[in-house]
Image (cartoon, rainbow, N blue to C red):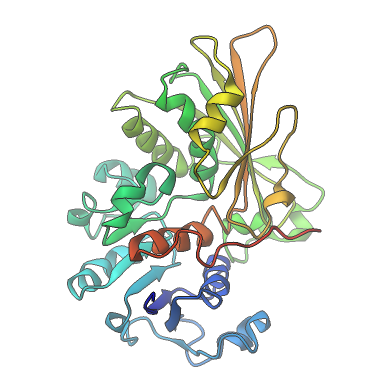
Length: 346
């Protein structure tokens, strides 16, 4: 018999937070302990999110007043720079921490501070934190106290590249990742460029001079390549839809190989990676509200170019779903617990 655990969510009012609550409220081995919010203290979760009526009866509490040490696991669905101020104390109390922001994703402190524009408040935990991409770090996640949940773009792009990097089949300095995200990837904030009236019927790139997910991708893939430097050209785009990420990745192959066989063999035991049949392309709606990453690898005719198409739901495999997957691994639950959810159509 599997014991139930107590779980708290710090930052329960954002899109990632409410998606996390949706998953945890139906998880067979989870009891939701505390849900925090600084702006909605005392309000019922169901009053802010009517979708939770009859499902979650909790009120939002102040994160500084919540007894978080009563939980077995605490998720931080907060902006960057928050979890690093709580993690050390929680770990000292025997609580496991999963950060859905970027506080512990990058090991290089100077690099992190450069990209995130603030001093790191918990440098001594960076070496312990495990990067929560189960497809490469499952064994480390099992023993982890602190997990850094990957970013949404990095998840889609890295899953698209891992078989090629692992087998040293491509030029690691000429990778191009052309990626698009739905508006929810920017979070729940009132900025004119993210209003649907502004984004609808439009399509644009952003972060051309540098996106915060770029160093995360390059550092993780370089470590996976046994320290050999991996360099990307990464261009993100904003799509006029609510959720979903589509990454089209272009690489130069160093030799001939069967790309379909490579990907099917690499991911054949992964519960949340689906390699598409030959001559098909994945679409974002096919993974909507699921924890699945669908990948279609192609070899371009007449060249050494390989093209990989990778799609995820940015709020699920790109955030909350992957966080629950990591919790399952950490706590010894079946990895798919609470995540066997078919995509929503239409």
